[in-house]
Image (cartoon, rainbow, N blue to C red; front, side, top):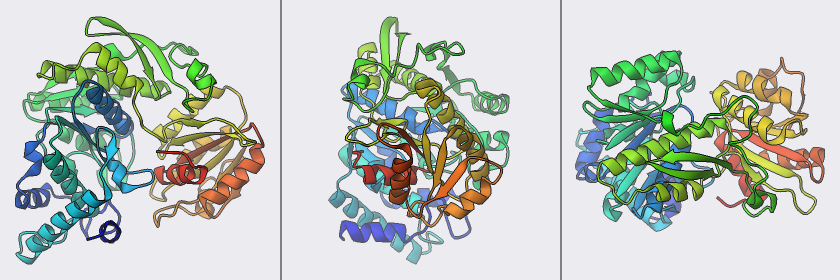
Length: 457
């Protein structure tokens, strides 16, 4: 089977959030599939990370720390910016096309057999297939540790079949209400489903509703809570001590992005945390990654040290998260950031304020129609000089007209573009040389913008 055929068959299964034809999620089916594959997930040492916002940043930072500690590290994230292979990495390198095609053939044939024999009621979904392929791949290449980002929710997510060394819960907010519930309490119950009886969970205090659910789940299951509070640096209102947009590296345009930089005590040693993940919200995600790394060291991964933590944070790569493309050759400066729900939109707004103060900018925006389009627009559009709304090459993407209608209460000048490339042309014309263009919304919008701008992943 060719890579192109494997991709076509995967995408032919439909949208990845649809677990079955009736949107019924069931881990029993996932376990049947993995059982027929010889339970590759049982041969892995895993960290499982759930949350509404920040789980990808936390996963990427922790994986970088583990790699810097000399550990062969697997990383599974979703969704992807440009290519599906990005989701399955070992020591930062995506799975090869040939390996992807081979694994798809193995898992797909197994699934077809199980359906034919009545062991499965229907073919596994896109995400179930990809997760099974990921487990099989990691079982074959044998990483020391695998960092798994939950796709959605937690309790019934396909990744939740593993028995993790530890679970991590990042910030919880409203998102995917169609699947997870209409309140933070209901959504928190789904996220807390990754906590194991007698297990270990790393987390931080957050909203009262989420705290209550997570705390009660920890008590009910006799789990041990590890707080990352010690690793969140204090930030006073208006302080920029934890955000450096004028570091030598950024000012010279070598890295193309600002960095967070602050001192921190870790395992009895003074470190300088320097991360490409900027914004106050990222301080919490970095803290969770540090606490998880320290917990893994206590579980026997002795190569994890304060210095490897420092290096891993510094070398983290998580593209499309407040990624800055400096102005050059008559082009404006670009900021690329995924912000597809209200919490993400507020985080972007705060970071833009800290990084650029009152500098005017044009906004390129597109989002999936199942998101809180109106609320996100009401957060971001008022701070932009002009807004160009567009859509990704994805059937779930809201059309420019739908976004304009959702943002009807916002008085900002809104223009429409049929695709991301056209939107960038219009935003570039508005901003002018040396101006500022912010591209945000769905990860698919940011990914297509990166391709159009020639920005590497």
